[in-house]
Image 1 (cartoon, each protein chain N blue to C red):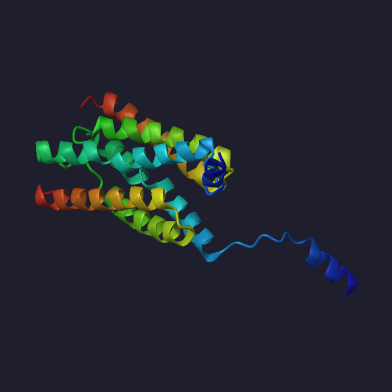
Image 2 (cartoon, rainbow over the protein chains, first blue to last red; image 1 turned 90 degrees about the horizontal axis):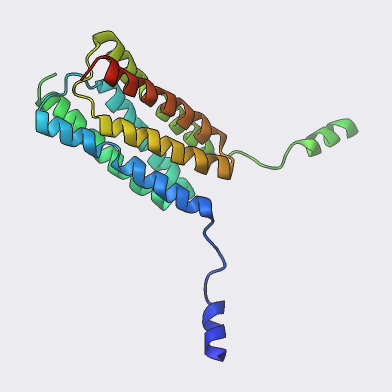
Length: 100
Length: 100
């Protein structure tokens, strides 16, 4: 019993709130946002309707969010934006690779 | 001089850090992400290359982020996700309006 009590005391005091899990779920959804678009572009080799400006804004915004996330030390935001950053770079590559 | 001192004391203690401005800039960029895509879709009336799954994930993720943002009381995240939510709904409407 004494050992159990000591173990419990060693658990960090910080508790995750319900909205932290909502945040993690949001990060997960944001991470996978461009996966269907990358897949569709790869499958159809057609990217004419995609806005290059949208992709460039996404790249810039993920860089900005990464700076912010490292500053506040937010793991989920770092992971989500790294994935979106990579996927948006792939889309930009496809945009040029499959002509317009 | 006494009045000035009292005025200064009444200024809230919370100071914005440099990374808060980075966060606002990220929110701004995220807000405008879909504007070029909505404009392009409207102008060309062509949306065949856009992934409907991407748009549906965006809608769902903005709802999740809005719940999170209201829970933690983050104004910039609320504003950014409301704008992205509306723009992604417009894109989904275009996707059906201009057929595929």
